[in-house]
Length: 123
Image (cartoon, rainbow, N blue to C red; front, side, top):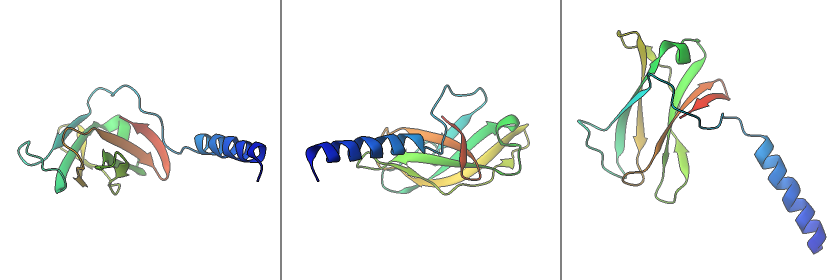
């Protein structure tokens, strides 16, 4: 393959990758979303950690909505937890309880709301 052919292939592949994203881009955090991580606020890197995400009903009321959490592994790659269906928490909000394995201390978490395979929001 010539250098020109490789360049055309690379640019085409890059355009294809950027155009097939199935999740929404991260945006401002909607009011009412809270996240509790760990047991009593204690989190150990590399161990399974409980996460409770509380969301307003408007974000998850549809019966097909699922919630997942993404966390960075030690290599900086984002890993997604299995998606779960939130349940009413009794205070007008909904709660999703998940387990994640934190890869690095102080690493970011992302909350992902899904409808089937399509992303609704990521915060």
